[in-house]
Length: 615
Picture (cartoon, rainbow, N blue to C red):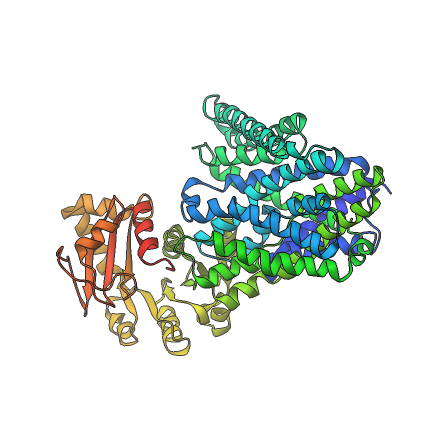
């Protein structure tokens, strides 16, 4: 069969699936793997192992490099600081436990040799951005959970790829198991070194060699993409399966440098990732041999159960140790750990080489086990990720903004910068499209319609803000939110001062536009330094309020609290029994008090995480 229509067909299917997945709010990998099976040799026969010939491993390798680079580019230092201990443990203790536990399960339930079991255990360490990214596209979780999933996927993908090739060469092919550790470290150091060198070259080209202003965004995108591919290619030339390490390090380094046109680079990388993700997932899913899967029998199912219901929960329990993780969030991490593209692509390569060496049974066990774990974890864990998150209530309660005009748009930007899960509702289709293009979650419809509000998630909302220029609309939104849906906090823009009483009668926090504007102008006249500081909230500075609970702070003094909070943040005010004042050092905190932290954005966030980990 001519390869051109196959490639075009696979890409078209993949892009269509991405659109469908966003529409129905289901991770795209579920649809991609099912469609891959349908168009593969077990279904329509549109894609077979002969379709791409020897070029499949190269195409998959380049695609994986792009995906890994994009994921690492998003892992900025401030994100990693959201759950530092958990990230370290998931990528060390967690990886070791995944390797040992999976190896033991394969040996026990499939009665295979230890070397093949170890090879499978190494491959199945990884979750990977190929499955984590689509999940996080449709499941909103708190920053520390997202960071743990992303970092684990990227770093453990590198670990899995390098460890698997070293075990394959030293134990399965050769006869030198003592060289496993040496080979692993050798490849890891080479990948890290190449990634850093290439990242330095890309940074120099983007920062020091300035192209014409009109071409600068395009040049930035292309140079960055080239850096990802060059790092992968150089590392692969030095050692097989080292390219993922180089691409990951290159992306991580560049992602944490101040690059020109960063937003354009991010958007370009994400769009390209979606295209190549679609291609490789459908192509590799089409190569699943159901005979080898069925040939594993109940032993194969036992391995899947052991990996997902025993090994994974144990490693998460020992790894997710940062205090901000709730019990439900640990359970979510335990039951959402699907395996991705790298194990599938490497297992296919190894199986072919084992068959060529006459080890047909080992090849079948390897490919069958790896693909069975991938297939079932993608279908069950990735496919049901949103339902699992909703059942465990780990999706942050949404803040809903009615009105996508200038006020609503400015507010959603500030709220999202603070990590809120924000949904904005507007009845103008063009406004909604513009908001979605800019990365916001937007719902098209009338904000005074109960079905539109339900679609936006008002039944779980912790906050509703009515920001339209029409007081009647804002009043009706407020009334529905308070009386029909029992939203605890409702805030409304009031354009005519005489209407404030009508809002306050409903228990709504009414913001009189005229008074608010006058207050801002007065601050600018009398207190310009404070006014400028306040306008920079969310841009380096922040003010956050927490509610004191008996377990967190009850009984502590302000002096004791000051000693525990990071540098760069202070306790500004205390609210108690309807009164707000600046507390003394000896003031004893009581349950129900509202404490406001004021200071640097990162320091305020750390203080909130320390004393209110689930906010």
